[in-house]
Image (cartoon, rainbow, N blue to C red; front, side):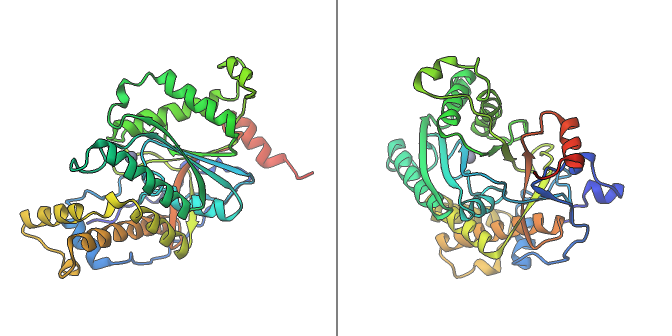
Amino acid sequence: MNRHISVGEKMGTLPSAAYHCSPWLHRPRATRSGLSPIFPRLTTVLCLALLGAVAVSAASIGPLPQGKVPPGKTLMVIQPHHDDHTWQYGFGGLIAKMTAAGYKGIYVRVSNDEKDGGMQNGWGANDKSNYEDAIAATKNLGIGEVISLNWRNDHMSSIPHVELRDQLILLVRKHRPDVVMSYHPWGNYDRNPDHRKVAWAVGSAVWLAGFANVRPDHEKLGLKPHQVPFKYYSQRSDYGRGYHPNIFIELTEEDVARKALSYRLHKIRVSAGAGRHTRELLDARGLKIPELEGLSDEQASERLQEMLMYWTSSQSGQDNGVRYAEVFYFMDEWHGVPGLESYIQQNAVER
Ligand SMILES: [Zn+2]
């Protein structure tokens, strides 16, 4: 598979958006590490087998400015499904960093995940099992609370946007997070309708939660308006035209290992069925992965998931001159007024 060449490399320059740094960013590192991805042979074979299903698109731009953990106390991660906090492309590594720095973490699971699993035990069993896994997996990342809104999985297109948005406004006003993480609200190329629906509602809610004339009835509950200062959005970069991250977060080996463990704690992600299905796809194309020979279907599934986790983190790292990284579309408190943001960066001093 051809290695992606970033737009910045082709043009010999970086997009201007990359320089919209906040005080919580460092300037970009210009060099590439040249590190080979972990499991290179496995990666090559898998990429051939999946015919580019994990290809990095032209939307992956680097090197980007380096982000760091901002000051704050409360982190709220709002996602549609039980496992969206810790997939290969984002969140888990940064969540681990933030909770290690003292953040209190809250995970909001918007759907009930009833369709994520087999039909042997019914949808109710899937909901319960995935909810329990979400608690264990987020706990491994340092998150202490899971709030489940229990909207029906795969039926989100019928949820009134305003109703979901207002639920999130209420949660933001109640918990008053300094940081919100979610899928990218304006990344419309995600094929999953639940992802698009929730991300759009999050983008609206974190903005509107700061205005007293939006849902003024919340005042009767003692809930004041709250403006979320720091937003971290991410999305797959290999669907459609992807999205354009504007920062990277460097991950340590421990961060990636922790993220990988959280992903595995979602039993549905490393099921024997998933391993068997991948082998059947390879078999249908006359292919096999030698490293998976002798493993059970469940072990093969776990091995593949771990490889993808390290491979994706490594690719983002190479794009930004470090070993491992996650990339995000980051918005700080000045983002809404770009001119003011630039002026503050150039002129503000610490008191
Ligand atoms: Zn999902």
